[in-house]
Each structure stands twice: as structure tokens, then as C-alpha cells.
Length: 440
Image 1 (cartoon, one colour):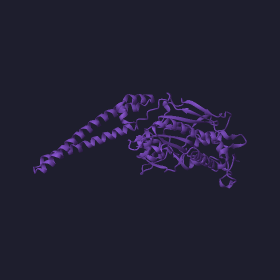
Image 2 (image 1 turned 180 degrees about the vertical axis):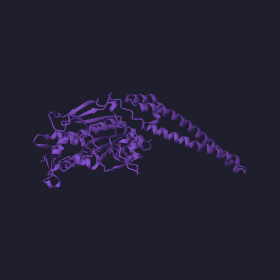
Image 3 (image 1 turned 45 degrees about the vertical axis):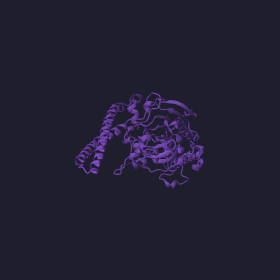
Image 4 (image 1 turned 120 degrees about the vertical axis):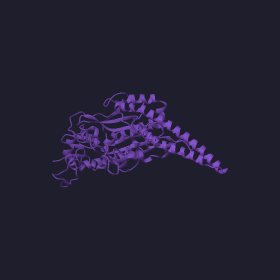
């Protein structure tokens, strides 16, 4: 959430930021917020004047009683003032709720480094590895025709089970809920364990296993509500949400807390299933594992001081890139343009990996700085020094990495015609095998 004081003192700067984003809803809301804020301050001024008047009346009552005089007129005057104050509480409360509701719909101010452009027009700023360019079957064919079961052929109908069984997954829960079997399930588990070990042992993150259900307050703090509520799975009557990403519980670890500067930066990593209805993406990239409603993800969250944000953003992004380098998967880093920037994001690097079977670059991670946007919504602050006033922290997060599309590229990149699927060497100790073989 933006700072209301900033909007009040420099509305032109906020308008310029929303014009850069092309957010017409925000541009329409800004004058409404300013008008409501002016009315709120007028009401507050009236309430303060009445409170001063009440204090005068209270003092007069005390003086009258101490001198043995009748304090009835002063008591009546004070009661009348108190009634006026109470009368103003209702419109004041309503206007404050109106302002907060509108402010929750204003996106973050983009970093000046974010270039203009729409989705797909990001600026490639780094590349690693050589993308495979020969013809490869898509992962849904590879996953259905390859597998590994440690010789337990009888454990699945028809012989050795496939790594991916999309038909049975759809039978269980519907389209977008893939079923990983045997070697596919082992591969998913190995990737998760490898990434957690890397981030904890080498990158210094603290591992967290959070709840997989979060409150409306938690979703609001990270900016997922109200903007993206239709994309979330919600429980009724509890009004809880299945986590769309571990960013939500990890960022909310310190909601309504004041941290100490000496403890910053904080670095958390978590593996969770993630649930997204993808209501706004119907019919887009729906084959195989490209766009699913449930997937596993390893998420990184960092909390820091404002002056450290740029450095922390680069560090977090490098941690995600290191996963891809160790897996020997070619990737590129893309600076997202204004038209593709997330609602709460100030600046985002997407990491994209080449999927030869699909024939395109797939986003595997978004590494973002949110400045103090989420911290204001969640009231997360730190004290710069003993006795100093608290300030809002800055939050950052990124996938390191998301499993569904990572499985896509591991299968397609490792496919060898007639020779199975060669799996990244660094995973062999986690897997206990080196490849997935064709199934008869």
C-alpha cells in the first residue's frame, strides 16, 4: 500500500507512476482518495475542537463542584459535546474505511529502472548456457512414455508406470491437477530436496514449513487481495485461502511486528504446494504442466532496510539462477516492462528457461522487490537504532524454483531419442538413478 502522506503531499508523482503503469482504475481513484482524505481531516479537526470544548466543560464542572455551585449547566454542555463527538464517529469511520479500500487498489510505484513496454517485451539483460535447438517431443509425451520404478512393475496397471499421468490426475480433481507417478514423483521430490539444501547450506536461508492455509489479512498484506481474489481457492465458512505461493505465509511471519536493525536482513526459504485457479488465464498454455492449478514451489523471501533493497534484489536473483546453473539448464534473465509488472511489484526479474519440446522460453521464477508496499499493508517495521522511530522494512521474494515448469524443461532438455531421459548429475544422489527409461 502506498503512503497516504506521499499521495497527499505529492499527488503528481503518484499520478505519473500510475500513468507509467497505464492503470486507469488507479488514476480514477486518486482524486477520490484525495477528496475523501480532505473530508477526513476536516472531520478530525471538528472532533479535536469538540474534545477541547469538552475539556473546558469538564474543568468548569470541577470548579463549580469545588466551590459548591450547581454544575448542572456545565454537565449538560459537556454531554451535548460528547454526543456531537459520538455522532461524528460514524461518518469518520466510514470515510476511513473508504480511503483504505481505495488505497488497497492502488498498485506499487514502479522503480525508475523499469522500462516501458507490454507483456513479452521485457529486456534480456543476461544469458547462461546454450539452448537446445533440435527437435524434441513435448514433455507430456515424454512423461507419458518414460518412467522409473525400481523394478516394481506390478505397482501400476499395464507395467512400468509413466512419470506423468495427466488422465488420472484429471479424473481425480479435473484438468490442471497433474499426477506424478514413480520416477516422476521421485524427480519432483529430489528437485525440492536439492533446492532446499542449496539455499539453506550455501545461501544462508532459514527453512520454514508454514501453514498451507492463510487468512484474508495475510493475503491482503502481500497484495493478493483484493486484486487477485478470484484466482485464489477459498474455504467456506472459515474464509481461509489455500496458499497461492509461500510468499504469503513467509512475508506475514512478521506482520504487526517491530524488528531490530541488527537482525536485518532476514532470509527465509520454504517448500509448499501452491494453488491457483488461474481465473484470468483460461485457455492459455494449458497443455501438460505449462499452466496448472496445483504445483510445488521452493520460495525465497528476504526482509531488509530500504537502503539495501537493490543489493538484496540482485542477491536473491543470483540464488535462483544458481539453481539453474547447477542443473545445467540454459536460462536468461529478463527485466520486466511496465505493462507486465505485478500489482505489488516495484521491479521484477523473470528467469526464463528454454523448453525445446514446447519450442519456447518459460518463466521459471519471478524475483521481485516490493519496496515498502507489502510492509505498509502488513505493518512490518524495524527500529534503526535504540530509541529511534520505527520505519517500514522492504520485502523481496522469488521462486527458486517452481516445480511444474522445471519438470517440463528437465524432461525435454534431458530427452535422448531411444536412450531415455538423462537427468541432471547433481540430482543423482537424491534420486538413486540417473535416467528415466522408455516404458513398454
